[in-house]
Length: 316
Figure 1 (cartoon, rainbow, N blue to C red):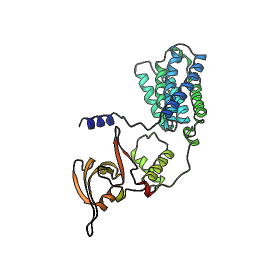
Figure 2 (cartoon, one colour; figure 1 turned 30 degrees about the horizontal axis):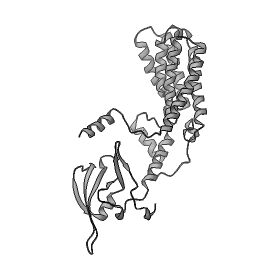
Figure 3 (spheres, rainbow, N blue to C red; figure 1 turned 135 degrees about the vertical axis):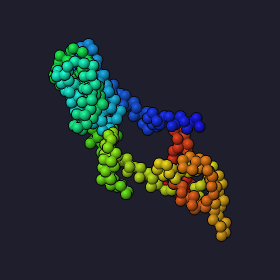
């Protein structure tokens, strides 16, 4: 009970299992560090004091996206450059043309979000930049619209350029995403138009490139086509999943296997330990259980993962 409550609570607050390697984490941190050292140096050439620190902080958020999520929609060159530039411009306009007040910073951020979405360059650090222009002090406000060109757009160009060069050293991190697109494959039963329709129906911003979405489903389909469980694969004490989506998913543990006898089919006694029908037991024909069982699974601290618990003599 306690473990289920903890799992539900973590899911509710957005905690998800980690799928990145230690190498990927290290490269993300290294790339961001190098780019921000350049940004810090360039910004402090023409600015001093708190103004330069505020700008560096906004660019640090951009570096997180570009180097930790190089293939994300929000991380591509146009969102970085357009998002930062549009937000800075709107922030300057707010400081010059609106009466001073505590509401101006909030209005600058809200307006920047709308403009970025219409311009198809949504970039969260852009909201921080709009607020920085309003709250960053006299030096930033006196710079006026020149602040958009330097240091904002120049710093953004540095981050994008550093990302292109750094990520080009690693084939799987090529940036921008257009350089990393794989050859299109075949999607069984789902066409690209189906995904376009589904995204329109969601009416929500999804931080994944369309080509990456197709590739993700292609890989999932390829994985799902691997050979299913056969009767000789079943083991007493083994766990098996039906591989169904959503509420139809379940995991069963095999409690007993009664082999075939002349004139009588084999039987399997099982217990459902997770998902639909959890806690229930049943007896079914061996052939029926095999049709239900898509693949063997095993528990770990993150939930359930697929295994390849199959007789090696049967081949792939």
